[in-house]
Length: 617
Picture 1 (spheres, rainbow, N blue to C red):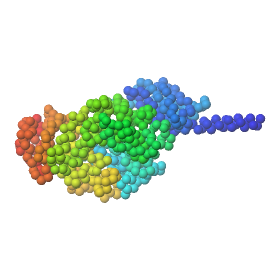
Picture 2 (picture 1 turned 135 degrees about the vertical axis):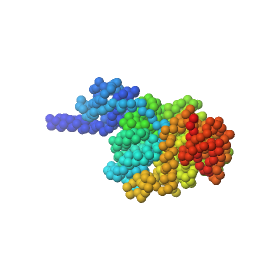
Picture 3 (picture 1 turned 180 degrees about the vertical axis):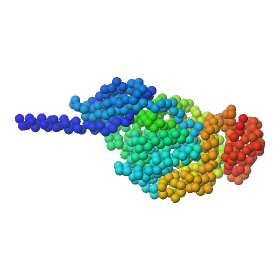
Picture 4 (picture 1 turned 90 degrees about the vertical axis):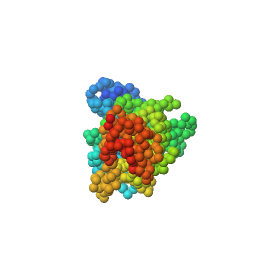
């Protein structure tokens, strides 16, 4: 009898222990919205042995279509169908084992914001200001070092965390607005809880939370609201190719194919150009797409259907939650391109006027154009990606003003790249830039010659496309002797309480810095309301003797840009060359100097300088 009782007690104890072993730790996305065109939603459910539970949802608002189990018993993927609703609601998700509820959660469905689907993304009307949050300004020193976060601040280490944060950005929105930028692209703010080298933000460890050292999700919402109140737009940096090695799911992946795995560590070839090669080998394709970007950056397999849906929903979640006006997608060609097309379509289905720009680092126009929406590709691939970065023009801008002018050198490089715009489905919708967070500063590439920097930036701001300015360009920030990434991303002077100089103010800048700031300030604020620059036609003339002339024009306005790339000689524009335009005008205004042009027949341009002349019809 005693033995029987003992067996019964042990049996009951095992049942209780088994029940206690089932728990719920995460539900992602953490909440969702009603009113999307796509009413399907897939929830990632994570918790110890959660797949051993039966899932129940009793709600007229949501139907549980399917419960998907994967190799890891700690995960479930729930397919839901949201009924057409115009109200906010909560549903109860319960997890039952052996007839008892072992876990449960209230899942919130919010209403979409009014006009959310109609938001207009960043475009050629805008000038994008790119900043790295850890290096821009430290507005809240209390979040520099936090419990549970591996890396602490060390401003003496160029590759360490320096303490910049969301509060620092908010404190200086007026500065960015005054400069004349109309959109802000912020390098990744999501959690990067890595043991070192985490400041840059490209090793995501949580896709639904802002890194606590930058602030909280609520702080990001406040930042977005503040940016919009100032009439500017917000662009979020996203990464689908890889995550961080310390991501919470790396401790127990949902399935073995969640990552692109190799027998031993295998690095990507970094040769993005191979993906447009009509003669591409399977070996090179595999090496590029499946290779890891770095040992600390596991390569995500977007062909896993659950991961694919996870990433798509994560993008839509952030757009709706934070009111984003654009996305910059990192290492775009490194992902499976069929998935990326599906992602673009899914986002644009919900936000038809939204904009996404992909980092397609290829050095020839045809190779970049392959990735833009509706490109006439031989393999019939359509990315559905609205915008790409103009990396070929970036190369031309670094060399064009440094070289002597020859048959295919010097300023002719700019002309040649523009002449290949026939490759792009929409050249007006590509992002043009002189530098960014991955390359040495433009001021360095021009050998600290402010004249050449001004010429390059004048071109960026008056040619076709969407201009991007890297933070600190306006105050002539440099990379210095150390060419490491940390030096390309130096702290903005004045962003930290004990900085000796505050370049956010005129009094904290030296004379050359104020000269450069004022130059950009005038040019950007002039450009804001110039439809002729935003969407006007472009006509260029072959550079001759170091003199390059092009026009932007529409039925109301004409703007003439003249660049003299000669080192020492003043040049006079040959009226006969561009008479098709100049014959219609007798007076104009040079917008940089503010001087009146009363004799367009004799335009004299100083060496290494640019004139921007506005004519009225």
